[in-house]
Image (tube, rainbow, N blue to C red; front, side):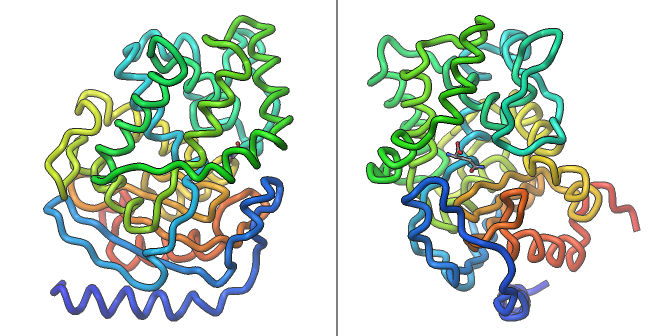
Length: 309
Ligand code: GLN
């Protein structure tokens, strides 16, 4: 399709889904409750460096769980596939993203896309001290985003002050020897990564970087070794949408990740990264409009990875 056709298509999709009023903005992290439920942006970034956007693609919000994808990549670079697999599994849980559950036999958290697995993954990030670990994480995000990275301190403090459920998980993992650094240190870095500020356009470029085998298509900078794209996208495919991963795989058929900020990213390998931002969430913690928009876009462009019609 031509550029203007694509832009018109996005405008039409945006308009058709803007009237959806279901869902509720997350409030369990007090700062998240300030999100505007009307915000609604859609952005597509291509692996050859073009960007198509409509709606609220500029407002900043905290990346939340979408960070898990990229930190998983950094942990893979730090330790390799085998060590990482020995610490964090790759099985979907079928449970909510914040379930307090570990694999019965191995005591590993199920996968890096749910909170327990993400906290364990973050605890594996290398660095001499907390500052160096944070700086490595920020440098990694910078390569994906193509500009300086800012942490929303209010969101970070807000989650640290109220995140006892994640704290409980971290203590449970420490009990089983599955946490690499100290509990509060691991949680601090995890809450900081969740408070990285992005907008919808950034997310599309980050997804396009994964689609582009790890190289940011806007800057040409490498964000992650091409070797680990396979691991990252596999785990997104099976676990990125939590206990909706099965239905998502069936209907949309793309590796994806959502967050309680209301963002969802998806990757079409070698072609595009897609991001949708709309804060009201369904009961599983996925953006209501986001899910519907992805169903529409996937169908309209035949993006389902197993589509052979
Ligand atoms: N920071 C959030 C938490 O740990 C991220 C959860 C999410 O986006 N699903 O609860």
